Image (cartoon, rainbow, N blue to C red; front, side):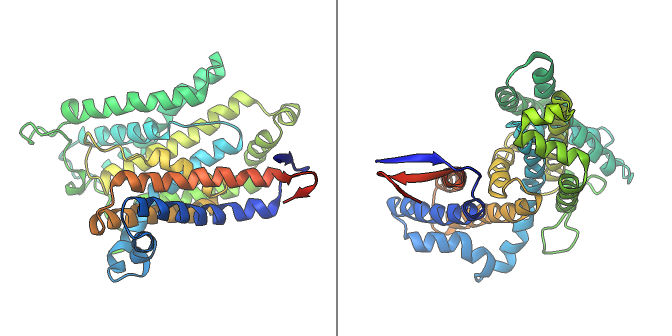
Length: 360
């Protein structure tokens, strides 16, 4: 008979090995899925993980890695702060969308001005838009005791409808002759977010992601707020006895995660996406949850996890183009990472006991 027995203290070995083992299991399960779809599993895995980094056309794909990793890291850092405190913001996708809408609207209000102040204004408005959207579930939890998971998640669908409305109505390009979508911000110098170093994919969103990682790491390891976040996540009752205000912490964590998600949306709409469109929502807000947990809720780990997840995006597009793999299969492959990570994480807190006395 097999059953689980809780460990006295979490295993550091299993905790450190879990992300690596989860990636290995994802490759095995993904290979079986690709084989079921009629593709050579080794070829599919090579196309996803090897070709974008060391393949013949890696020079092109490498530049796309930072383009994809930037928003994932930026959003995941904000989510990780809340997750470590037991504050569950699942609606970062909505905050990402609203940040993009607010930032784009602020800039387009001054079109076609060439003032250098426009882009900084858009950055501020994008951040505030994401923060304001995140405050809705935060305030409802603090004031009314609602479940922040459900509220933040449902607000994603509200944000998607706002996006559709903006694309076909109040932000639609008046010169587009009926086509939905805003003006192309990438073609307007005052609002564009181009590559800072040609060929690298690095734009201001990548710079903001690195700053956020440094800020979060210092805060978690050197600041009182970071101590309160870690203490609340590890021992909520002890945190209350230590004087931590749980309501204030909820507002701070939601505010920071919403602000960073809004920034990610702003940098995306002024850079790679270029415009507000019906299909602007990319799923980054949901994928960032995987990145946060794969990075062990550690800012430095999130950088590595963000690059890995970006590789699945870039490699997945490559596999879809060259091998004809459906987009749904790539999404399922990405989802397997979180599934196996959570599954393997069980072994960090529990021993597997077999029969009468054998344990692992």
